[in-house]
Amino acid sequence: MSSRIVIAYWLTLGEPARKFFQGMIEEFARQHDAPVFEPHLTIHVGEDQADAAEKALSRASQECQRINLKLLGIDHSDEFIKTLFVRFAPDEELQRLNATIRAAAGDPVRYHLNPHLSLLYKNIPAPVRSELQHSIKLSFSEVTFDGLKAVRCVSPTNSRCDVEAWQVIATRELSR
Image (cartoon, rainbow, N blue to C red; front, top):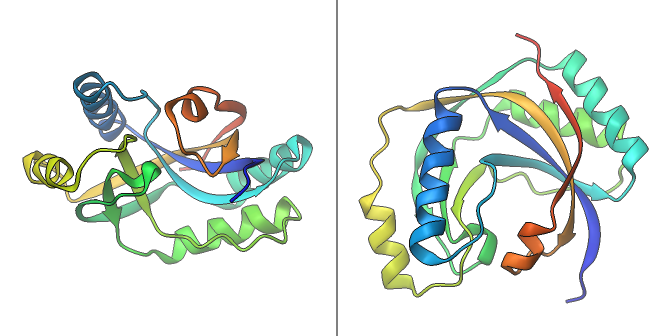
């Protein structure tokens, strides 16, 4: 599969969840020599068009409000960008935000929205991933997302180098 440059549209977390998950990501990265990244939930991946990204975030920030998502649990996979992650319940507001961004960006790409927040990007054996999964204790059942970012990145993201090359090109706050 060949790689290409895309724009990933992220929902970013409000406090106190942002600080909590950032600390967890940094600790897992330190323990497993993995990249550090900002906690986020990808809501769309589309064409590399910076002007369209600005327009999409601007419209979405005007039309959409903060989103509260219910946590379903912690999971892991052998996919690099889903080594260890938090799963969220599907949500109508999230679907609407995805559609708003896709339409505003004029993006024909249909991104399969699978709401999750990654905690670790690293190819590690399943028993280690499982052990990490079971070590995580969450003290809340819902997370508030209050920001948007457009990030230029390579797709698929398969390495630390790919993660460290991410470039934020636009940021917006969601209305209350």
